[in-house]
Length: 193
Image (cartoon, rainbow, N blue to C red; front, side, top):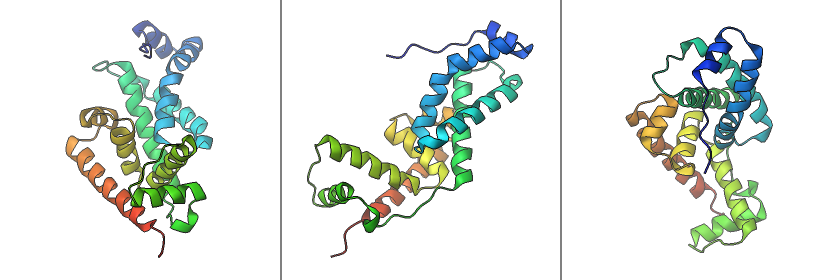
């Protein structure tokens, strides 16, 4: 189990006074948390470093807005999730997929899924994960965030609300619409017969 990440109020006070060493210390402490959130929300590995830099910039610029009503790591998580959302929205990564775009293993997975066969090889599982990532990438950024939080990370609706700042009904409706779109995308991938 991961050790809880804590940033002391003393460290925050030192950062607010302009102590550069304190800032570097906080970045070192928070980097695993921020990186994990980014990896879970944005699949393009090439973007992770840029998003992390943007997230830490927001943390630094908005540090005075942290009122202490919630744990600091929750505040950082929320800023990081919103940074991922903004990033996804900016790049507008919504490619369409067709059956012909799939690799051989992915095509077999779709065919097995349609015929209700089970998939058990490691290669098939990796291809299934890649296919799932490609399908999720066809969703709009808000839907991507919600699906990743609820279905891939298996977080509760309340956790998703806390991390995004959105209401429970918005989370539930977004998840429902996203799941419907994913189902439609999967049906479009059926081979032409």
